[in-house]
Length: 107
Image (cartoon, rainbow, N blue to C red; front, top):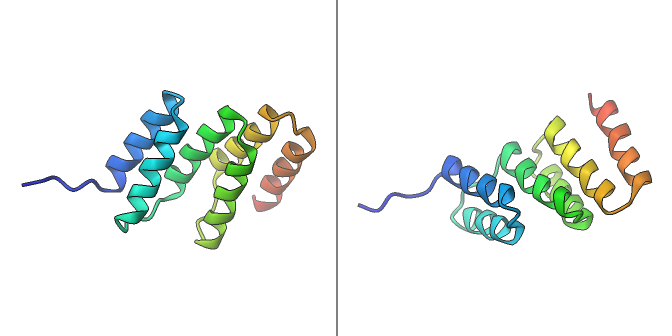
């Protein structure tokens, strides 16, 4: 029979897309995953956020962080680092410092 992808297979594909700097493909994988009723975990969110970070897509990274908070998924150090990187790569140093401050208070 047909093998159904699960959280781990999607996580692997999203990671591969981000490493290959194919953020659009990673977004499509995330959308498909959610369409199939598989909810992303902190690792999947952070990986996609790292892709946004490397591309300096701060708006998308911020939107992802908001989505995580709505779903009550607690960001980890990787999440905050990826968000900070998005701001730094977009030349937004104040915002990057703000994320760092938030990370320290989130502990």
